[in-house]
Amino acid sequence: MQESDSAPRAEDVVTPALEASPEATAALVLPHQQKAFEQLLDLTRVALFTQRQCFPVRLRTNSLIVGPTGGGKTYLATAVAKALNIPIFLISLSEWVLIGCSTRGASTTWPAIVDFLAKHKSAEGVIIAVDEIDKLSRNSSWEVFLLTEVFSLLDLRIPNNLRDQDEDEVIGSSTIESAREVLSTRTMLIGMGAFQDLWEAQQTTPIGFRQGSASAEITSLKKLAESIPPELANRFRSEVLILPPLTECHYHEMLQRCAEQVPANFRKRFLSMGKDAIPLAMRNRKGPRFLEELLVDLLIAERKAVRSPVGLEVTADQEMMV
Image 1 (cartoon, rainbow, N blue to C red):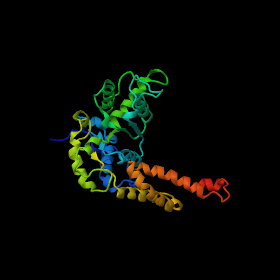
Image 2: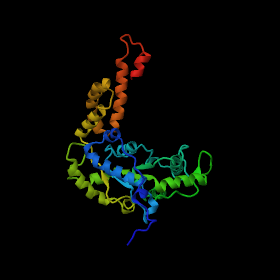
Image 3: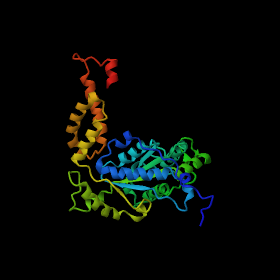
Image 4: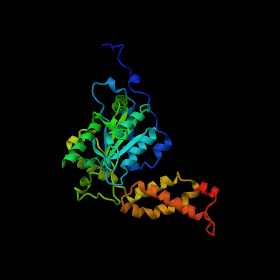
């Protein structure tokens, strides 16, 4: 049977994918995170660079990342966006403001999502990452409304009659259509959650913020992930991306990789301060965020170091250095 002349060619269905720069992909993606990073990168390319209308069913690219607090879930999503040089919208359920509600003047979340999508209608694609998704439940009427709004996003549906709170009027149809086009054709959706009860459910498994075998833990965690509520799990791909707890070795490796990108004249002090900071970072489950604090502490220390012996302020040239 001959192919129809009108059948789409492979090159027409899959648009040229943006390549991740070597510098971006190498940035602090630890060996135990590398597989999840590469899977997320591949899925994002499919979500953004495929002519979806050529296929009879929706492409199921929604991905769920599960890992304890400080395990690098948000960093992983951000690293993919950075690698592909595309914008990312990050939102936590604790910050989600329902349609028709206002908290201390904060804008409701769905209009903010629509604004983000419409503003990036010319982008190659976007990522929307929802954190704390494990907190979705039906325990109260407020939580039912929240679940409905989040599920609308995961199902690629924009609610009707959204209002712009700044202008106090219904968002225009052209804005909605632009947002809907980006959401349905060029958006990668990522859910992130600690699902802390999954970590605590298996008392005999050495899961925790201490040294251990990451590969052994992942096997157990994949079984634990099966207990995620079906109505939530069914909105994501079947394969959950598991990030095990960070060990002390992981923290030292993060520190070393980050140090390689710190200016050479700061590197020695950065490593010294970082090694001292790791125990507290582990206790507080900081994850990659501990590097952000460390860089600030480093710059404060460097500023103090370049002050003159008599306590004069740094000169303009010295200021530029730090």
